[in-house]
Length: 359
Image 1 (tube, helix red, strand yellow):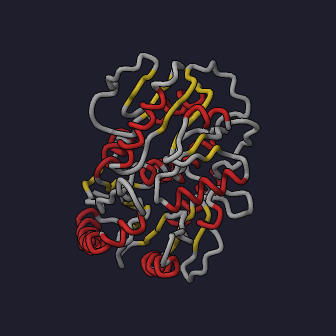
Image 2 (image 1 turned 90 degrees about the horizontal axis):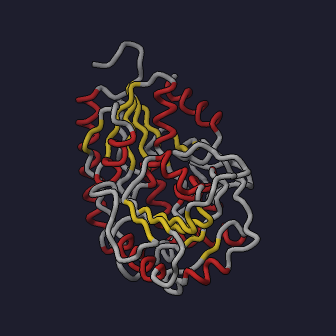
């Protein structure tokens, strides 16, 4: 039963990797801080992650799109060939959300990149850092299609800063839309770190694996092969939320774990000399809050990651190396005179936006 006077808010992230779920964490915390009645809805790894992160909150199984990466080739072509499946999932989502809202007496929906997660009976927030999607072809068509979906929402929240110093570059700026969009600052589950990190360096390298299969597992194999040429202490976080925490392998200097809590992960990252990861947007938001400039390897064919890697490499914020030519030794050798991101969460902006929808 909904408490009198409390807004009941449904938070529903896309099931594409964990990034959409992890960046919902500060939003959920702020909603709770401001007295909202929060319900979570997710599928796959985001479901398992949010269930562990917020065990006190109700969470509903909300079928996702089942998006995968191709093992080789263009992600855009892969999506084109599977567009009918995704469209079918979106239609199913539209029916499912109507039922879910009615059964749970929802007032507000916060959808992280779920296109049909809205109703006419609720106030609807859409989260995206891609107001301008980068594609190798048909870019105007793809952006028109995305716009068709997000303009059905009441407001768009962009997890970035509005000015010239930002994390998303062209992706999250200069959009032409009738739907109001508001910048809420970079979203991260981590607490911003001090500029001076005096922690002992426990790890030579921390590897953060992420994203849908099969590319996640494929990259994991590449990393292990590279680590067989080194002897320094390395931690690999596999980005998997099920199974045993510790994974067996033949390298005594490598520790592999499926998943850590936000606080544990933050400490391990800050206790390392180097961080290697995909340049997923949520990962960059997390690392910028910690003043950590990583080595990034974009997922092949993932134009968003390729753009973000090139954008930040041009500002000397990251070392950008392709997966095809990846060499850990070359990546470490290229890591010199790297700048800090200098882009941090804006707690006041998020507090203001949450307060606005709860009113």
